[in-house]
Image 1 (cartoon, each protein chain N blue to C red):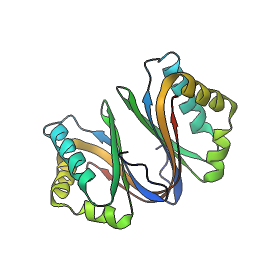
Image 2: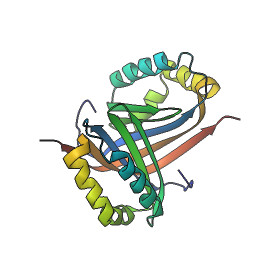
Image 3: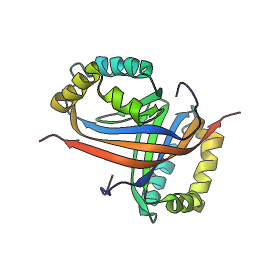
Length: 106
Length: 106
């Protein structure tokens, strides 16, 4: 995360399984990461991909920020492309982060 | 996830950056996945790794299940090994899943 806010805040957990069609995928993800991070209320984004599986988690100040991010035009287009081309299946979960703890090697 | 329970339930989001020391890491993760899935209250586990970054999310019926999983002897040993050898840094977040939606290609 780019910042370390204190809970409570929201996490959107997006876990996906991709198709073999990767055309335009990497560029769109990069563009979405850039846009998302600039979106009001976004506290951070992280995304990890292994073979055809991916988990992305974005962190948000509140539910209104998540709602308005979902309605950004480029993001709507990306979601449509995702369903038509890139994803075999995915699940999105909206979760309220109640507690967090971090470890950093001394 | 192995099951699809309805919210509310809990997610533990574990995001990590690893050191170069991978000795015993893969075997321990596999063992922890096996053990975790059998633990009472565990609804599912998913883990994705890319280069030195990883995101694992486990899903739980309630906070008590998370607490008792944290206290399993093999898991305590694995956490200790993680801090001593495998992880440069990590953050664990406990979050209440309020909503979820899934997509599956027709």
